[in-house]
Image (cartoon, rainbow, N blue to C red):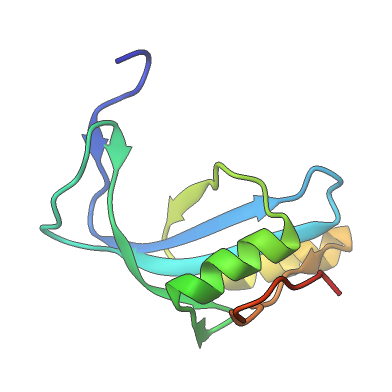
Length: 111
C-alpha cells in the first residue's frame, strides 16, 4: 500500500487550484465534497457542484479544460471558496486565470 494515508474528506465547499510550471497560469475550480458517498482506499472523496469562475462546470468541460490548457496533475485542495483571494493573488503576480473551455468532439488547441 505504500505511503498513502487512508482518510476520507469531510463534506463541505472546497477550492481546487494549480499553477503551471512556468508560473504564468492559474487553474481554479470550486465544488462540494459529497456527504455519505462511498470512498476508496487512500485520501479520497467525491466532489460535485463544480464551478469555474462562478459558472457551472460539467465533467466533459472540466476534462477538456484540463487537457487543452495542459494543467498538471495533482491539484491542491482546501476547504472554503477562495476564488476571490486567488483572483487577487493572480493580479498581484501577473498570472492569467484559466477559463472554461467547453467540450467539443474534436481536438482543440489552447488560444
